[in-house]
Length: 207
Image 1 (cartoon, rainbow, N blue to C red):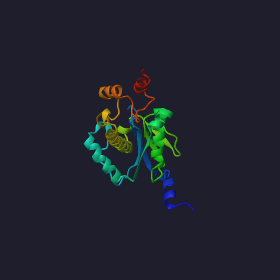
Image 2: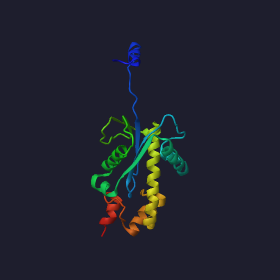
Image 3: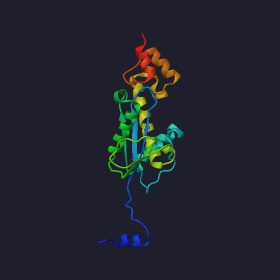
Image 4: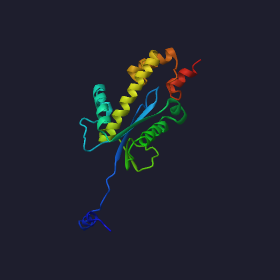
């Protein structure tokens, strides 16, 4: 037997659409020469809006840290995952990034009905998904994911600095800055450098 709500909607010419949970997904760390690539998935709670969400690259480190805690507190659920340096070297950075994204979605406590992913490529998922170019500046859930991924990766780089202080990971976060390249030439590659990336490979292959 049809419900009254369904019949009324049909009379009004409307179609009943069951609301679905939407997750936003983004990554951090595709460009660095060292460390894992990190991805995050976030399902926001419409009843607890978070002001100030934006592309993580447009926010100060202090603002990102504050939003990191707020997102984890107010979102319906969040998940952060990564793909290791070994996986990056074995699969290539694109496939490793997609793998980290899939792991982030799979790690959500609640199953989303749709996933919105920053960029133009999609990971293999078990639910519908849409890629959105510059989604981290357009979709709140993707912005939230970009903040979680960025802060988490920055924290990992602080840990790498403690283990390998000669490279300055706390400053450049693994990106190919002049200081990082100089340290790489002086000290060689450490275990967390991505061997498949040209500047690292060149150091390893030099006589």
